[in-house]
Image (tube, rainbow, N blue to C red):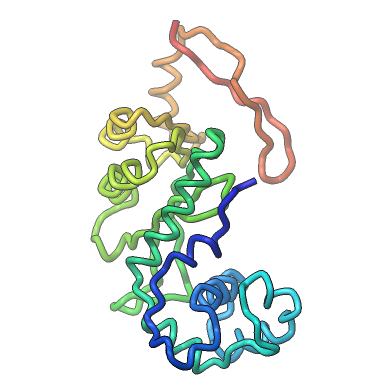
Length: 242
């Protein structure tokens, strides 16, 4: 269990409002907005209606003392003054604290996704590269592939050093075969970060190279076992050089 909550982290944010006439806690409204985002609520009026329905459960934990949630205008005007950089710092500090409490949580996954609901400046669907923290179920990094005019492996390599410097407790990166590239792997090795990349039969050249490389390697039992997404259990073969 994490000793610090997100609400505690957001309570460290500077309240940008004038003290006179303040009725609702700034950290509570930030947290309410975050809960709305997790529920895929994108309109303030909808957020207020949702909060009203669940106000008995939300009011005390979020630090509110009013019988009704703040109106949509109050939330919008307040959050418009929130500094994005300060918010990111608070969120990063909370994640660092969570990671520091358990070494098993330092496992991340890199994957590219196309967001069909969002369009770039050219009207094309957004292609984003995400770095996802497994146990905490949080996104540590998200970058636009199109905006930086490159591919997923190069984009990850550009930002990986910054990510590992921010979260030095990360110990394992998982991903598809597209990330099995020497320049990217070298960056991970420099930061003492292991990697587990899935090579499938449709990557014939890469698979053949691996099979030839490890043809004479001694097979050993894996340190952990896993279950496939669709429930079919498989014990992966892991090779180690002797």
